[in-house]
Image (tube, rainbow over all chains, first blue to last red; front, side, top):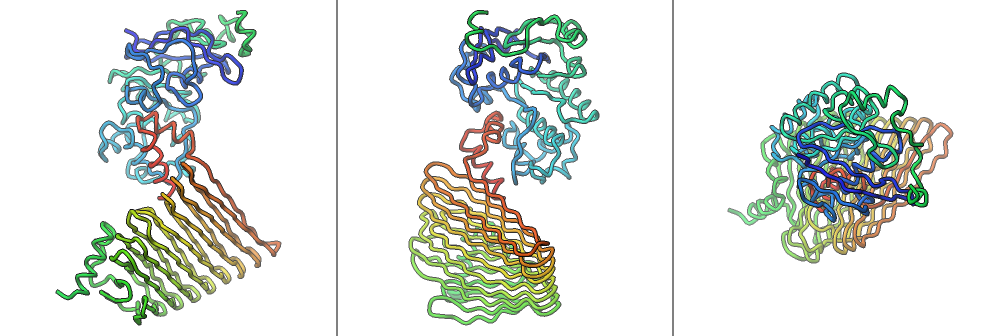
Length: 247
Length: 312
């Protein structure tokens, strides 16, 4: 059963059509990988599903758990169970890790914060009272962001390049957490350029020029990496509006 | 029970959680209501002589040479009525090699028309360290005029750290003016954290003069303004000695119709000195906000959390 369905979604940004009649369904409780060349529209798709500022003026429809999310702001979509992990997590000057994690947690207790920090491989005694600022490395902030998402217990997680800025040990831990989230019934959509990340998905989707152009088993879509953009034969330049209309 | 004791208790009660830890024989403290000393306790090495004035007090604080005051000293200034004037004149002598950390709580919980003035002269002898954290708790009306003026002299190798915080209640009108002269190898740190609401008006002058070789200073101002609040921040750092180092930093979040102005001034007249500055004024950072919204926080709660971090 699909938890997320997109029907003919189109979005223009800066005079360019970045999502170009995209239709796709994501099954509930699975880990999905979304791959494609730079500029294909992958991050835009995640931002549109999340309803981020600047990504709300789309055409077409997005259904989450059967309900159309059009018009719902980010926080309301989050309260439905959708959340997002950024490629480069934000820095919060002065804001302590425990406050950051607890802010969105379903169970706002110190015990829960400690539990999720431990799950992402960060010692709670060391990190609870540190600030989520520039004193943390990008990899540490990425793990803390993930801890916050675990505490939130979401139904759909959009992960934009989960391996970006992460060392090998941390990446292995993230792969373990994907399994935990899946076991808890969550659906994960990972945007990635990494074959290693792709191999941890249940299904894969290939995106180019704002459309899903292929989907299926990971082994099938992995050929994209091995065949240098095949089976996609599109030139990876987002179309202008005039060009998009003629396609 | 005497009225002085009752007043002291009421003052401390108005501090809420911040008044609870002013206890113990080894904790020095002084409570002043208006122009009356309503409570005090001293510890060896930390001496306070107080004279009551018509509209406040004059206090001479002395930290004895070499004394290390183990626990923070608590000073509680305030007024419980809605109107009045409290003028604190303070002379502080921190003698050579000594250490003291003072937490000053200024509470005006019912203020409608209150003026709180402080004129302080602080002398920190060579090798001594003096920390002064001033936390204000005001009521919801904003009827307080706060005018703290402090002049600080740091001797060679001395350290002075001061923080001014007003994040509970309405700021009212604040006209804050701190200036410090820094001798060789001394360290100065000034921090102001303020939330302005309603029609609050805040003016900050933080000034440091790095006159001695290797003197260092950082002047930080963090402010969040909403509604129709106004703020002007004038941070000035001058360096006139070799290897003097300093940084001026001002960060302000502005919402609604609030207005913020920051004027960082750095003046260097020695080729081996180095001073930097940074000022950032704007709305709440979009990426931070979107991140917290994507965790299910409302925009108001997310903004409050971001401001809490900035002012922490």
